[in-house]
Image 1 (cartoon, rainbow, N blue to C red):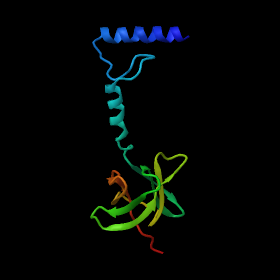
Image 2: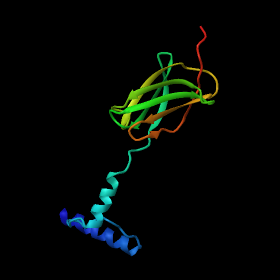
Image 3: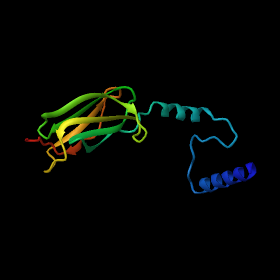
Image 4: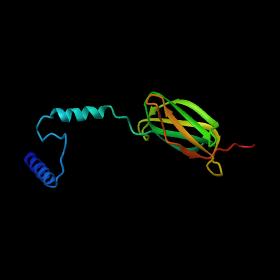
Length: 147
């Protein structure tokens, strides 16, 4: 089997070279990595995790804002604002590992009534304090109960 894999890799490498494609920084099977491979791998160590994201749902008659790809065990600022910039709800939350949500996850129940009829008149955003990264804006409908 080892010989079959080596033969396949050699055939693939020959076909790739014939097509004019160059594989950079990939050591040959069984060979030690050279300095350029090690440098390439070291450069990847400093890359930031995937961009934070948010999603919303209704829970207990309120709008719930949740998201992932935040720094685990670090603070995340979750804010829901009107399109004018006025804050409707804001809270600091600690990002925790979650079985379904990648990276550090936050789940925040707001005081905003939901479900809510109408058009999007606001947005939610979250700030990862550790990486100083904002999530993209997520359109939401903000309303208040009158009862």
